[in-house]
Figure 1 (cartoon, rainbow, N blue to C red):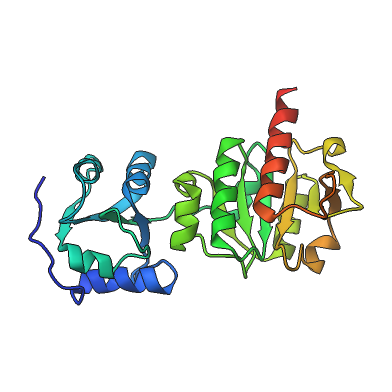
Figure 2 (cartoon, rainbow, N blue to C red):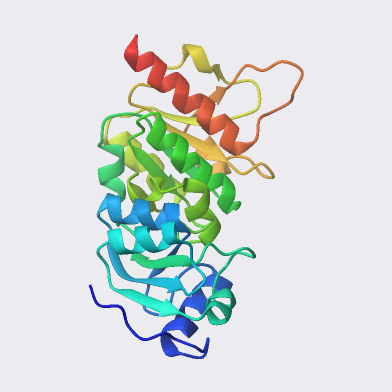
Length: 259
């Protein structure tokens, strides 16, 4: 596998695109996302997503270089000083890849086996990534996001997902359309609320669609108006954060399928 010459300047067109993605929300001008660090690069390669190029800092560890080579993608070496200028993290691990995120039709998500989630205006990319990781762990059908949610390609979303974003079917669509898709697929639509809803342990979650709202605003009125309220019984706390609530719901759905 050929290794190209070292790129010395962050003004190089390739590195300028990477820096734009790192500073501007996660996509290069031509639509590639950043998978930063050895773990995400390895996960991208193992998951079979398209990898345009792997950038390898001259200061990268032997382990990072090994992972870069195992990816099977073209490797581009970058001077350490230039690499540090184009990443989204303060402490770089010396390797990143430009990847094409998988695309999925919203209707395909709700027709897969298992519980599907709707993340409604969930703006924290760390929460979105954590939920994707839980969705994979507990065998969810997939995840739908309404406009106003954190971008799937945001670097923090990718990092928090720990690679699950490469494998969990995801799509973005309006909340009202999510309700229509659930109905068309014969699924019950639930909306997570702090209190007053059907208790989690009493809900039929096997083939449900569950909406999780932002911590600031909850599930939107559009979805609440057509969904069955769902509540996680808790003690001494008013509510759980979005990622925790989603994980509890996903676990309960997984447990119920095994019973």
